[in-house]
Image (cartoon, rainbow over all chains, first blue to last red; front, side, top):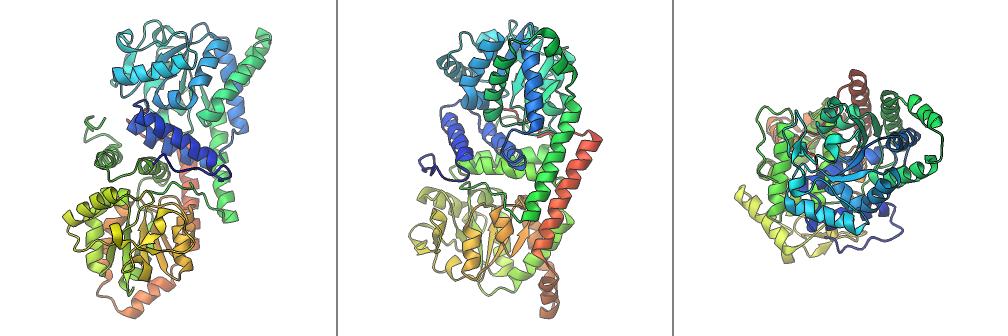
Length: 266
Length: 266
C-alpha cells in the first residue's frame, strides 16, 4: 500500500506524502488506527480551507507565539499523529520557548509511549515527560487515559500547546486555570471551541510557522507582545474561519470545480 | 483499540460503531488502510450534513432506484469499505434489481478480493464477479488497478452502482456510455460530480433506503418510473446539498454548538 509511487507533479502530492508518512508510522506502532481516521476528518476541513494557512490562522499563530513566549511553564503535549508528522518542529519549538515536551495519548500503551519518545529524542529532544510511571498525576473530570499527566509537566503548566486532538481534555485543562493553545482543522470541535487560542490549520504548516514567529517576536518588548494578545479574539477568529469555509464551498460549487482527494480510492 | 466499550447512550454511538466495524474488517484484511482515512473524510461531510438522509438524498435515492429497476444489465461495484459496512444490503439490492455484484479495488490483491467475496457469499450472494483471473477486461483511460473489470460484469453493464470511491473511474465509465449511480458523502468529489445520479449520504443509511425504495417502486408502471428520472436533475441536487452544508455551518456557528467527533482522540 505504501509502495505506490507519488509523481512529484501530482496536484495532491503533498497531501499524499503526509498520508504515506502517517501510514508508515502507523506500521511502527506510533500512530493509532483511530489516528488514521482522524487524519481523514482533518483532510476534509483542510481541503475546504483551500489547504493553505489563512489570514485568520496567521493571527492565531501570532497570538500563540506570544502566549508561549510569555508563559512561565509552557508544555507541548504530543500524541501519535503529531510525533509522526512534526517531531522536528516540536523539538525546535520547545527549544525556542523553553517548553517541556510531554507525551499524552488517548490510546495509552507503554509501547506507543516509547516509540514516540524515541522519535522525539532522535529529533533532538533532551527530555520527554509523561512516559510510563512518570504519568502518575491525574487531571480531574477526565475519564479517558488522557487524564494521566506528568507532575512535572502538564499538571503544573500555565500554558499547554495541544496539537491535533478532539475531546474534552482542553475543557478540563481550562477549568484547571491553564491556558490552552490548540491546533485543530475543525473550527467547531470541542478542542477548538474551548481553547484559549485556536490555530485552525494543518499542523504540518502551522508548526514551522509557529517556530518562525516565536523566533521573530523573541526580541520584541513585553508591552508590544501584550498588545498582540489584547488584540486577539479567539471567538471572532473562529467565526471568520467558518465564514471562509462557506465562501470556499460557494466558490467550488460555482466554478464547478471538484474537491477531489486524489489517489485515495478504497 | 477495539476493546473500548461504547456506551449505548453515547451521543456518537452509531458513528463509533461504524468506526469499530471498519477497524475490525481492516484487521481481517478487507478494508485498506487508505479506506480508514477515506472514512474519516466522509465522517466530516456526514457531520456537516447533520448525519441524516437529507431530502436531496431521498430524491437521488428515488431516481437511483428507478435507474436500477429499468436497467438491462445493472452491476453493483464493491470495494473494501462497502463490503465491510453493507454486505447484506448489497446482496438484497442485487436480488431485487437483478444486478450482478463485482469486486473492484484500487488496492487490488487476490487476498483482499477473496476476503470480500467470502463476506458477500456469507451475506447470501450467488455469484461474485471480478475476482482473480476473472477481472481480465480493461476500462480504457484508467491507469490504476481500478481499470481491471470482469467481461461479464462492469464491462458490459449499462448501469453501474459505485458506492464509496473517489477518483476518475466514474468519468471513464460515463465516457464508455454507461450510467453511473454513486453514493458519496463529498458532493464535490470527481465521482459525485461526474456520476449520472449522485446519492450524497452515508452508505449505511443510503443502501437500506435504496433497497426499500426499489421494493416500493417495483410494481409501478414504466411511464411513472420514467417520470421520476425526467424530474431528477443531478446538478441541481448537488447544488442543494452544498447549500445545506453551508446552512448547517452557519447554524452550528450561531448556536455555538460544537461539532465533536466523540472518543476519537489520537
